[in-house]
Image 1 (spheres, rainbow, N blue to C red):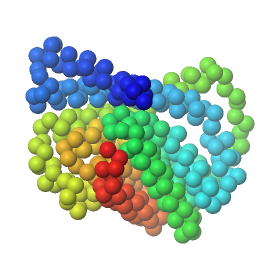
Image 2 (cartoon, rainbow, N blue to C red; image 1 turned 180 degrees about the horizontal axis):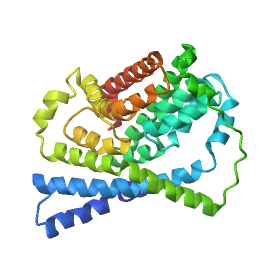
Image 3 (cartoon, helix red, strand yellow; image 1 turned 90 degrees about the horizontal axis):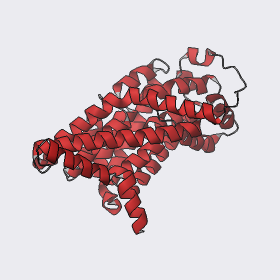
Image 4 (tube, one colour; image 1 turned 135 degrees about the vertical axis):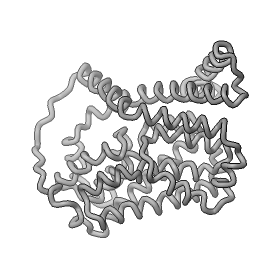
Length: 334
């Protein structure tokens, strides 16, 4: 148990990095990390480096696994199943695709035009930006393993239930006709060598880092400001765990924003450290990643208003339920 705790602290939480950054701030910058400015600089440098290291390693590993399951092969696998089993597989597939919601939509179009039920594709669309293997380790590095696993479980449950409800409501006619008219060709996938898979994984790391680096910097910057500059009473007065509207407000505030889950994690970390309920922080994260306005605008290009509002309504209600549940029982996970 001690060995696991040591490995968790050094490899995941990177305490060694925190200590190095502390030395940098105190000995090179001449600041104390107990002061607001020094604490902000330490928070920013430490979190940025930690997230980029973990993200690069995780994206490479996930992409290597993903190279065995190109979209055509995945479509064929999903096509063998139906009902809730297919929804579960669609949601699980989303966990190994480290994409933001906007990046997931082209795959959603491909799956739908290939004849997969829209319920399955929506399960994928919900889980892909919301839950992935990288977020598990990053959540564990910031909070703990219990919270990380609980988040993944509720995210998958939301994806499965959301997709299943959309399937039961028979909303296929509310997908734009051009999606169904796209022709999907069965092309035999060329077998990749180990070198090819390594090259593909490295390219994925570069591509995804290029997409999310700015959001990470902004997210960590906001997190540093919340953690060191905004007094705890101010945050508690607005988003305190005793406020019945805190989860609802966090969800509403998250919708206009657009960021990857990796950019929202530092903000959630700072909020929780300031006394905000874990459910409120997670609701904010989920709203930003799954319901952001840019992704809704893009999704509106491929589905009609009724289906879009149904999707947004199901996900919103799910996020609110998850947020209030975590606030009520989150103490069991800390």
